[in-house]
Amino acid sequence: GDSVTQMEGPVTLSEEAFLTINCTYTATGYPSLFWYVQYPGEGLQLLLKATKADDKGSNKGFEATYRKETTSFHLEKGSVQVSDSAVYFCALRGRKAAGNKLTFGGGTRVLVKP
Amino acid sequence: EPEVTQTPSHQVTQMGQEVILRCVPISNHLYFYWYRQILGQKVEFLVSFYNNEISEKSEIFDDQFSVERPDGSNFTLKIRSTKLEDSAMYFCASSGGLGDSDTQYFGPGTRLTVL
Image (tube, rainbow over all chains, first blue to last red; front, side):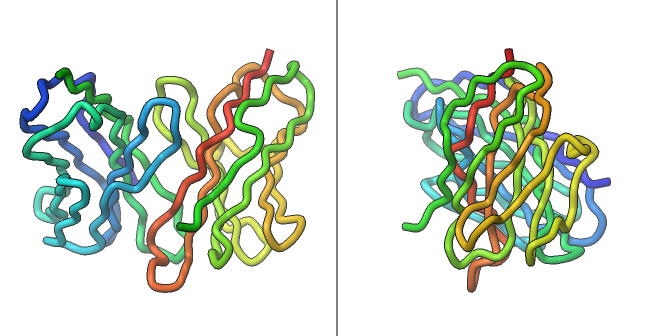
């Protein structure tokens, strides 16, 4: 079945540091890929997505590129802020039919210190 | 901006009691979902719902669980006889809006605590 593996945290960074969170997936066909963010005490918010190979999703300074050859969707941000402290979830949605479930990775907690 | 809402934000119940978690999906969406997140663990799919019936469910979604769309706006998850291990954050999501059918939008969650 489908699966998502992402690097374990916590990841602790200083403000303005570069952030990378690795995400790889296993799926049949060509899934859509997502990054969701969960701020402390809140629900899941969509951060960015990519629906086909070589697509780059971007939002709020975060980027991720859909790499079919390496089955990866790594999240990057060039200069993090304290407000980026959150748990980040990589997820995929299979293409078999509309309304398909999301399969999530385990989440990576990021802590940005001033 | 339209959003998914959930009530209550926190529910405390005794083991063996029935609970109903409520969600109001985004109004023009067609697909509805429930997920759960046990503290410190990954988000897990429970069930998806389309056209007034379950379209997919996970192994977690056993006979103790049911979903319903009782009217044009609400989407509910019922747990008939709660167990300690049902304690988790339950998220409702919806998708299928025009021009963005791929993206699931999540509510803020209901934290269920079973004592």
